[in-house]
Length: 319
Image 1 (tube, rainbow, N blue to C red):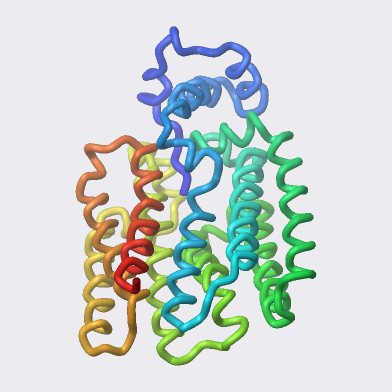
Image 2: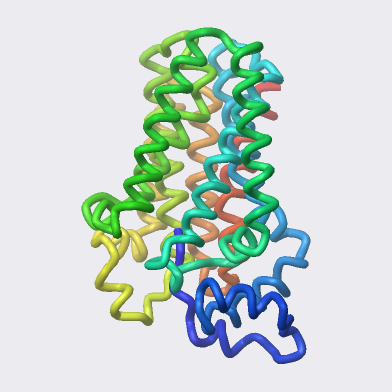
């Protein structure tokens, strides 16, 4: 999900865009090369379409849309409190992960604009994290059903183990198992928690969940491949071989997932949520097809936009 800072990115920052205060702060924490890229991030973040990603609002939005879709497909009504709890929880996890990325010394050279944004505003974000956690705990205690709370606590423990493994393992965990696969499954489990924690889930539900988890993992793999600087041989050799294989096979994986999803739809076994998986896969295929013509920030935003558009489209079909 991160990429090494390329020389072209550093040299591409014009002197007129340099902001000394920003550069000095980031250089003290990350080094001189990162300082130049931080200035570039400062310039790019003014583009309106980047704020969705810089503020870590992309994942919560996607999670809420898919939770609404799964609840609707299961004949449930997603309560507003459940949607808020889910969105806040996802936001807390993603911001915490980005802050940890920025504070882990061995990841200094693989950071993106969102990490520099979090680093520059880490004190403000830390305060907001504490406030969000307090709101989550209060709402969960007062509004959520007991089964939801228990399931949420179990999932939170798993997420905590994941964060510890990724950020405190000196990289050995990622060499054994690509974190993108774990993120995809955890995201799918958290998004559908309001459904499976209360009703348990039928065979059809778990089939839909499996396809959605694969789509989420594909999304994470695509982001990592799209942001990756393959010109750095040292970085290339340190990456898990699955990621190196996926880089040239994103379209094939997306096509297979779309075909499987459409096959389920054709026999009438699963409903709108699988239509969304098929559409999301096809959209990832389209973005990957045009990846060389798009900037890295644009690719990062489009990666989550594909999932959001797919879910909203499927919800429209259910209306």
